[in-house]
Image (cartoon, rainbow, N blue to C red; front, side):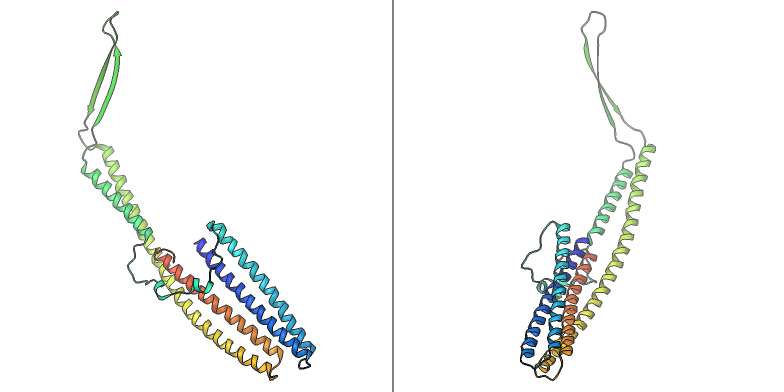
Length: 284
C-alpha cells in the first residue's frame, strides 16, 4: 500500500511538473509577443510588466513543481530501492484501458483467503487423524548397560530394548484432539472476518472507481472548453479586441483545466489499481 501510494503520488507530481513547464513556455511566448507590440506602440508599458510578471510566477511555479516531483521520486526509490525509467511517458503509463479494469462480480481467489482456507484444511485433517488414532503411538526404548558378573571377570555390555504400547486414548490424546479442533474453529472465524473486510474494501474501491470516472469525464470536458476559449481569446487579443488581463486569466484557467484533467486520469488509474488490490489481483 505504501509503495502504491508513493508511486501514484510521484506520477501526480510529475504531471504537475510537466504542465508547469508548458505553462511557463506559454507565458514566455505571450510575453515575447507583448514586448514586440509594446515596442511598436500597440500596447502600454504596463501590459509588458504584467506579461513579465506572469513569466516570473510561472517560473516559480515550475521550479516548485520540479522540486515536488524530485521529492516524490526519491520516496519511491527509498521504498523500492529502484529508479524509475527516465523515458517513462506519464500519459501512456497511467492511461487506463478497458481490459485493465477488473470485474467486481468475477469469482477471484483472494490470496489471503486461500491461505486461511489451506490452514483450515490442515487443521481439520490433523483433527481427523488424531481422532482416528484411538491410542498414542507405541514408544520404543533402547538402552545399554555395562557390567560384570563377579570380581575378576571381564566387563560386558548389555543392550536393553523396551516397547511401550498404550492401551487407551488417555488424556494426552484428548488434549491433542481438542487443540486441533480449536485451531480449526479459530481459523474459520478469521476467514469469516477476512471475507467481510475484503468485501467492504472491494465495495469501497468500486465506488471510488465510479467517482473517478465521473470526475475524469467532467475534467476532460472542462479542459476541452478551456482550450477552445484560449484559442478564441488568443485570436481576439492579437486583433486588439480583448485586453491582456483577460488573456492572462484565460491562459491560467486553461492551464488549471489541463492540470485537473491530467490528475483525473491518474486518479482513475489509481482507483483501478486499488480495486485490483482489493480483489487480490497482481499490480498492472
